Image (cartoon, rainbow, N blue to C red):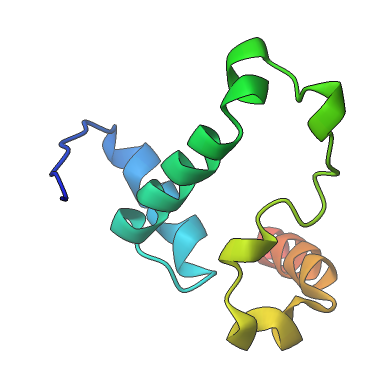
Length: 92
């Protein structure tokens, strides 16, 4: 069974979220259920503001099960490219 949920977002926040998720080939509508599912799976940590000691995991790879394997080759150097792009755009 699926339900429809309506949310209200500020226009700027919506645009920034769409821009962010488009970088990983997701729409906002696709990203929200993934985020909710992840939070439900990690609910003890979310509710208490920390991950329980018995289930501690590193942040690195925490969402790997949701990864798009086709994008993995583009991850190498992605941070560096983003920083260069950010600073080059600010020079203009």
